[in-house]
Amino acid sequence: PDISPVQCTEQEIPNHIHDQGLIFLNLTNTALYSFGDGWQASLMVPFQVRLLRIDYYLADNQESYTPPYAGIHHRNESLIGLGDFEVSAQRLVPFGRSGLGVSVGTTIPVGRIEENPYDLGAESKEHQHIQMGTGAFVPLLEVVAFHPFQQSGLLGRVRFEIPFYENTYRYQSGRAVRWSAGYWRTLFAQSVGFIQIQGTHESSDEWYGIPAPFSGRDAVGLALSGMWRVQDDRELILRVERNVWERPRNESDRGEDESLPPFWVFSFGLSWL
Image 1: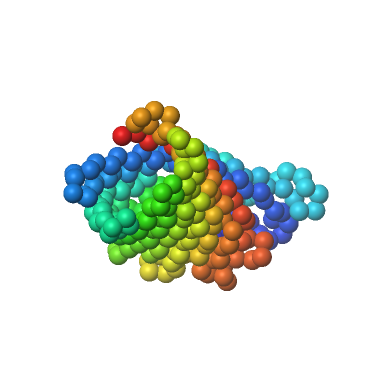
Image 2: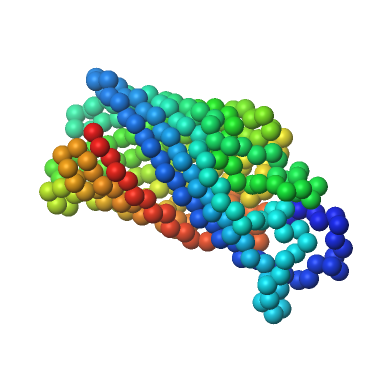
C-alpha cells in the first residue's frame, strides 16, 4: 500500500504474491547498581540484529518472479546496530513482607532512525520501515509490586512509555502501557520457575502528526521462565514467550490474511552480582 511504481502499467505487473521472513535478535546488556536504603540505578544497552528475507512468486503457478519494484519496499538484507539506551533510578519500599518499587527514567536516542517510508514509497524511492531507535528521549515510569511466601511469591509490573515530541524526521512513537503479573516458585535448591501473563497496549506511531499504517496494537501473552544458580554470584536464565491474543489499533489497515500470526520469543541470559 505504500509504493507506487510509476514506471509500470497495471498490465505489466502479473498477479503475484510474496513470502516475507523476519528474524529479530536482541542482545541486551543491563547494569544495576545499588546505593543502599532501597535506591538503585540502571543502564540498559541493546544490540539489535534484524534479518529480512523476501521471495516473490506468481499466484497461478508458483513460479519465482521479480516485480519491477522489487527492492523499493522489501529486500533481502541484514540490519545490525545499537538500539536506544535506557537509564533509570528506582526506589524499593518494603511493606511488611511485601514491597513496592517505583522507577523513573528515559530512553537515550542512540539507535538509527529513518526518513518517512510512506512518503518515499509514494515516490517509488527505496525506503526502510525498520528503525533501530526512535530519535527522541522517551520518559519511562515503572511500578513493581511483590509479595513472597515461604518458597514462592507473586510479582506484578506496570510500565509506561510516554513520548512527547517528534524526532528530526517528524516521527513520534506511540504511547505504550506494558503490564505483567506472575507467580514464582523455588523448584530445586538452585533453581526457580516463573509463570506470567503479560499485556501490551500501544497507540499508533505518527509521521507528521498522522497515524502510521500497521502501527499500534493490543496484545496478551504468556511467559515461562527458569533461573538456575550455576555459581554463588551467577545465574542462567531461560525465557519462552507466546502471544495468545492480538488486535491492531487500526483494523482498517489490515485484511484477514495480514493479521499478525502467533509467534514465539526465546530469551537466554546470564546475570551476576
